[in-house]
Image (tube, rainbow, N blue to C red):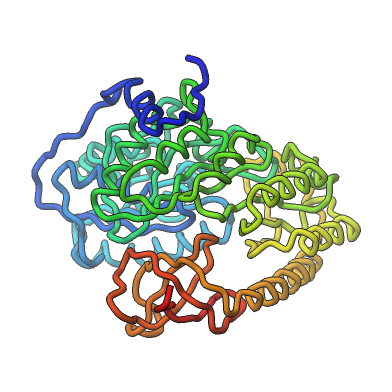
Length: 474
């Protein structure tokens, strides 16, 4: 099928996508009544949150009910992340704690799910013998069956299913979503980039897109439930393609759904931005003026070692193109310091890039080896921990100063803010976000309600939060 063009008639694009097929290849689940309760804990990124909602939907469709607390659960599922070793150690600590609950309550099933399960496989049972299930991210459709196997088994070994499936996109399954004004939709699973430091392609498998009809089905359900903001998720989300429908087409279609006020996406990959995508973002008001754009390093030498597929010059040009099309665009990034072979000159180039681009915020990390990656197998981790720590401190200090300076510039500006809920510090204040993804706190005033977009004038700021009040005269 030829690649779809952006249509002047909005409904045409949606109809074209919907008419590609009307049924799921994998079918729907049917409820199997039982009185068991399931509790799911989530560690990691938004993809993990979305997967937990997916698992919840599968379990609910089989008659399980959600446990209101872990103490009443018959099944406890720990959904995990494997991107960093620290996250895995945290999960092992949590599983050790949960093992005590199993001793108190006979018959409780404890499962480790997700990327860590895929990464460590049978090693989990060696360190955490109380675990009954080890389930990879492509086995969630089989969860009820695997749980029943674990419940009926008298063997010491856990039930393990970590098979990767290049066809599995969980089409036809409705996630058990958390209530709120924002919702997630996974549009892509897996990754084909194989950056040398990253474990994701090995834990989530190869890249494959979810059918557009399925994405729009979920988007409409979210809109009908009162969701105002949708975030489209993928490991390299802007590389999405499905039978000629590309990411720009998909963004256009989702933006046309009644009831949805904002559309965001994460995480895009620098080399997968196209002029068409930038044009769609610039001309579509519902698409958030915020992107997360991971650069990882300001050194061409290090980017080559990482196999990122772009140069610093190409990244600079992309930033310039995006800002030329959307001058009000906010941008965050990922930075890794201390990658093998990183010299002081390489590190300085990263500092220079951060100072030049002036990201709105950044996620900054020291490099740590991940077993199974190319870097772990082939590249010697030759940077001392003390050097990594010092470089990280320098990057953080620079970025924090940029955040503080840029946030101060917003004082006395008026932003359209989506009300997300009560402020954590005071039930008399709302917390919301601007279209550029900045957090705003302001007093409850008038008839403003959860899920509304209201004008807020900024009165003061911290380095990461704007503080203001509803603009009554707007």
